[in-house]
Length: 109
Image (cartoon, rainbow, N blue to C red; front, top):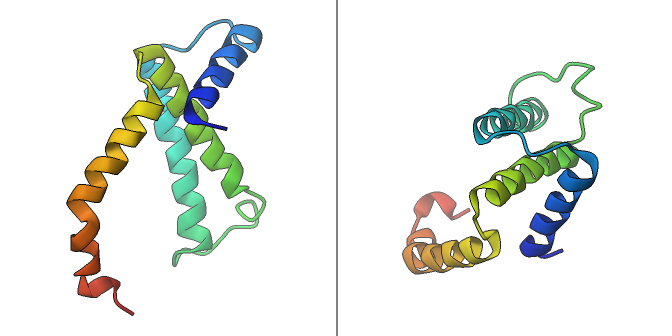
C-alpha cells in the first residue's frame, strides 16, 4: 500500500469506526506512547535489559503499525501529504548522506 492509500485507509477507518480524530495534542501524546512501547520491546529483546515474561508476548510489528497509524492520523488532520514529504526527505537524505555514510569508519565491519 502506498502512503497516500494508507492515509486514505486511516481516514476511512476514522469516519467509519471512530467518531472523529482525536485532537492533534492527544494524537501527539498517543504517538509518544506508541514509540515508547516500541522502545521497550527493542531495549528488552535486542538490548541489554532483561525481558520480562509479559514482554515476550509483545508483537514488535503490531507496535510499529500503531506508530504508523497515529502518524498517519496526524498527517491527515494537519494536511500533510506523506507521499510527497517522504519523497522529498529521501531526496534530501540522498544528497546529504551518500558519501558521509560510505566514509564513516564506524560503519565498516
